[in-house]
Length: 353
Length: 187
Image 1: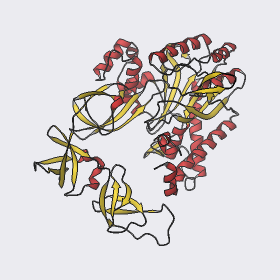
Image 2: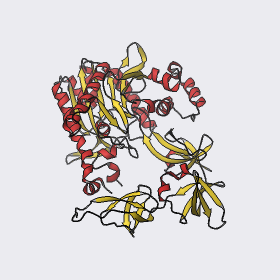
Image 3: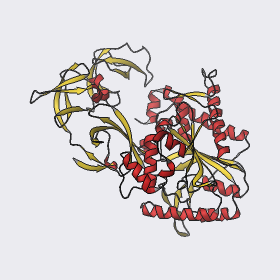
Image 4: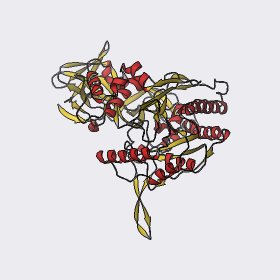
């Protein structure tokens, strides 16, 4: 049965879907109050940023006067927002759609999803951590105030899948190094050396083959041993990721093996991914070129990256930090929905059944 | 046994995991931020009935186990297991509670089921697409309530509570999808 048919049969279900409009209203009010500009960024683009771990939707732009041109659906509003910051926009955000292929058969992904990205100029990832803490409490407070029967409930508390969560700041902050030590009993300094990482993973019983990469071992241990513990009863900010992950993140100046990047988790939901932005055009160009090689090696859809973005970095991106938040997952959290599909009126798995 | 990769994993498949046969009860793809794809599974041990989560690298291989199905009649419950009888050999098999998952509330004595057999052990049943059960408790549908889609709950002979349309009455036999517990049709 399609969602609209279920709604027709069971009108009480509408309440869950109405959470989305409130979350969106709260987000816009939050940034309006802080004098951030909201801008629209294109969904149909000519040159994506090179990111090998994503699969892109490819289409064709037809023009009567020239040969058909390859076109792509945007995977995030990051590059256009950064160009606008170079152009002088200042603090800004986009609340828009993004598209990522191959993201089916998952209760946490829909190939078309709603993304919120905001950027603070003259800030680093620590400032964005505070924004996240404030935004979540702001949305929760707005929902409680506008829901009959919930007005008197504590504005910093919510229940997700039978678990109580307290959103009050400060949230738990754990570096990747601390998280690996605490939950996987791994000394990350050792794990950063590939042969040692392979040895550690094998000893833990993971399959390690010749073709297995360091990134796969890192993420497999993370997903099996660390992620299940994150964001229990209060949100967790996981920060300072290995530098090899994050094509657009700035390296930490005191330890170049790590990037100034964080993610935040609530009850197992990964909700946002932030970094201090890389502003060095030479390094950005080199990273994009490496990503393109990786895309080719993986046999994914090939494309050329956005050279105009490198031009923008040459003019100068001011020091800034930004984050991408999955709005559908935020709605899951506030609507107490177990699956992303339960927050969407037309989930992709129904459309493409 | 045959070697398969995560691309062939399916809910309901049996694989060997850490030297113990397991049933895949749930699976989905996960894409960590800035990482390759992984397959997150829920695996039920056929030894202990316990469920654990494990995340495989996409493309990782595993041994798929040969599971046979045999038609058996459900006889009765015996402490925390359920006794079935092979209709041809008259041999009896016990299936522990954990391995019958959510099907227990639809089990009807003397009915025949497709029992999954691994080696010489019964390890579960294949859920039928539809089970037919008699309604044993039902309230009258509110008079005059003709709104399409209005529902009520009834209890069927095996004790399961099902949400049904208002016109279903005591004594009706109804078809239920045991996978989701939803009402399908009236017999």
